[in-house]
Length: 370
Image (cartoon, rainbow, N blue to C red; front, top):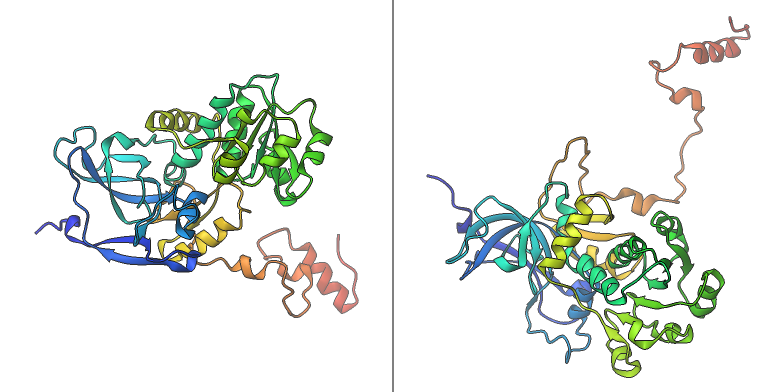
């Protein structure tokens, strides 16, 4: 008898109270059933976004109402398992990418067909599963500024997923981009043609030191930086923010939101063609979702943090167990060990043996032969 995967339970991430990553729960639920014009997708990869941390903490409930218990996650990529009534765009086994309002952090999720597109084969699952929020937000923000080579803009949190994509879109339009980050990410930003400056107070002064001319746009993906943009003389209609509702209400700056599946298709095509890149900072297994959000909330990751629900092998790739991150706890920590001569570590198969002959001869007091 053939096994029907829809008979199995689904696994979902949710929270039943507001708080930090520790309130996230991993629970089994009945397999969801697709309705009219919907499909059931087995999720292979799903990206994390700062807005999800805001929802979990209960920030701005008047703007982002949450009914508890609440699922988490917007971005996803996976394979269609089944289709509901009236769903005709995708069939079982199709590889897709897209988004849901909430609940992408799950083994299976029901998605309206209009929120999906076929995954380009050039995209890895990790990139496809984390592209919607970052990609379409960056696209929408840069499009709103109508940039040209005459523009110089500032992007805060420029090393993050949204920031590094927005920087690349702006550079494609000829603009000069100044990006804020921790100093350890400066070389990361330079590879995208970004002029890096460090986070912290008096940002406007540091920007003036590197800016070739007036600042004509400001994309605040960090939050709380609108005052610095105003100090730089940027018109408030050209100061855009993602998370800072207070600045929108009190300083009349512009709120930017993710785009639709059309915008996702344009961004996916650019990434597939390697015209822009979405770096993946780290991939966590589902059971480590709290650790993944802790990494996200530190806002130090270069690129996107992703939950990988399936280990997918690519040609030439070594797949490491995601939970083993030994270097995270040992990097820079002195480890006691016996002294070892470097030559002792050289395998016999390397070289012609002259190193070992010299060592043996030195120890025996004889001269090495040429």
